[in-house]
Length: 97
Image (cartoon, rainbow, N blue to C red):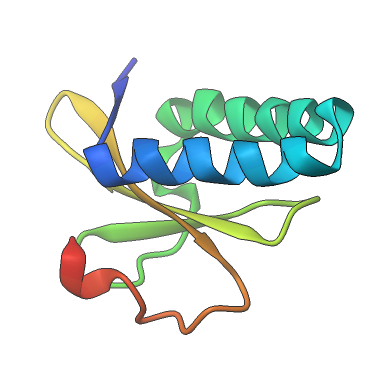
């Protein structure tokens, strides 16, 4: 199974999203993290299941929260590149990757 690694930017985005939901309630933040963890844990089993949005970047869509997870399949790992809100311009942040 492929190992999950995080781009520094993606990890910072995750912390910011968690803090945002925590400002509403601890329970909402926990629900978000549960969904996030389930998605990330499932990607290595079927890494090609989510569509490509560029030559090497896949986009996974959260079911209960308005976020997208961008990742790349590497030789021995999955690299989570970004966590993006769906209402933002889809090209926003690609230049930073």
